[in-house]
Length: 387
Ligand SMILES: [Fe+2]
Image (tube, rainbow, N blue to C red):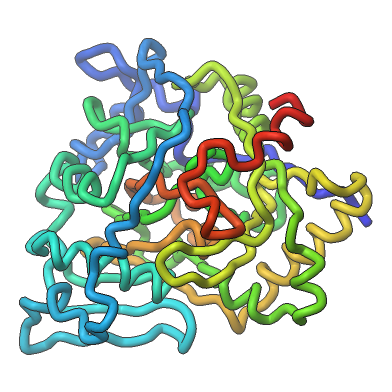
């Protein structure tokens, strides 16, 4: 069994030396041609080598979805101001919904609590015809602050003054497109965003501001359903196992490519391979090839063998996945703890694809609700591995 591979590949969220642009403040940004062609220049990524952030420390997290009325299956606050053309359609029976006919920007706090619950229950939800993007970065960041502390990515670019906004920007360049497939036959890289963090990223908002005529979709897989598909006997064998998640390769690639680091160290954390969601009480598989390195209780070959099986199970089970297609006014929210996703780079024409992401730092992943918000959870395992 081949070891789990780590790819060195083009990352549209990281600083590329070809960008070549500078802001008035002296931050790096995309080149002048892309600045001119960007439809939403206030959302362009900037990188400033002087902007440094401290390491993340353990944080308690209380899911706003727990404040929603668990008996209200109609989500009366979330869907309070629905238009006559309101639709609420399931993308597949167990994952994903598409909503049209409400404005997220007008939600009350009660509506936001129900939004958090709804997104966790459906895994990923696309809201069509939203008016977020024209309101600027500050509005979107403030909207997400309601749900909890927001993540600052260690290497990506952000609009100046909005470090919580993670930008992915692919310029109108054939060279950029070619670099996607330079060392790889496809663009698929399933992952849970930044799973190497101690407090995992949870509720996530994503919006594509500018995009090709077709292509550039995102695939999602349901890790709760993937767990439920396992035989009871197999699932029982996974209990008590933990994965070392690491940003080391992301960090080293960034350094090697002349990139800019917001934290001068890689992050490594241990998380249970099966985690439980405090809101739904459902268990899910918590693993992804991009950042998962090894099952710490097993020998390397055993770990590779088991992880490769589980990665295949998640990535190849199209009957627990959905595909989200973007347009400029669609806002998508997903629960990054209970799903994994991958970009799809399938467009040929060199056009701009510009998007932003904002993520709430959720609870530290746990296997048992008794450990929720326990800072000392897995302390012995950290000591044993000296991390
Ligand atoms: Fe991602």
